[in-house]
Length: 342
Image 1 (cartoon, rainbow, N blue to C red):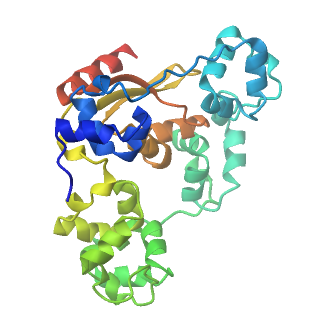
Image 2: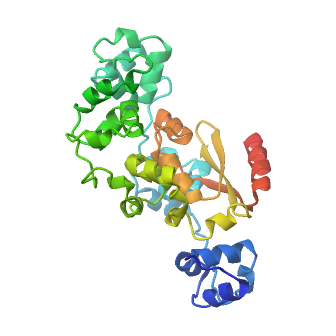
Image 3: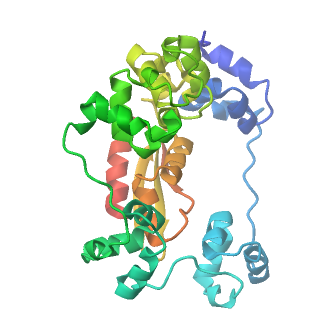
């Protein structure tokens, strides 16, 4: 049972630790309550030293930059040194650093795009392997000329609602994971209609018998392998669907910090931004869990930030926090203000 934190118990808990970071890491629920109520400043036994500033002289910046091969790695690994080098105009002297992205306009050339497309066997591989070249070919109408790229046949509406079609498709794969990744529509139809248990030719991880995911303990054991709900949904969709249907997701408190439900409407919201300094573009977002949101931006291929930097051929930079400790109402207002500013 989750502990109910009062002022007295929070202060008692905090005295077990010597620093704020240790308090937050070891007892996040009590820390969050202390943060929301402004009690941290009263806990003078918690050491909260400010980081010592680094003086980036030219020699120090150059020495730091030599740890990296690409400019994008330098930016991500030591953004403060990178910014000093950029402002001072030292990049041209850093001949050991390479740039990952190609010359502007490179993928506007028909020759370059067609040469790139010959590396792939299917249209899907081309799209996933080089988004910029693919989009250029699509915009200019060159895809129809690329006859060497195999096209996926588009099925008529309702095709995957027919059991025989779904079963025929499933025989192409060895496991439910392969089935899900290769043809999500057919897999989802099988899942919705409870056909997966009948597909005995598919290897089902942790599904030793029919109705495995109807067992609450099995679902919970699977869910505990993941840090975020989005990972649980992507990697164990059958277990996730059962948890969602039976209302078990609310009991899976490890997906959120302790005290999350009570604090989600409090002053815990953050406004952040990702900036492409070269193109002078920015993405402004809001969240109440910056670690989870940053993880999604960097790993989910349909995410706006992920797609933008992938198309530019660049690594996603470190986010910058613009505002923090906001309520829901303040979050909505500040997100609009910061978006307009950028």
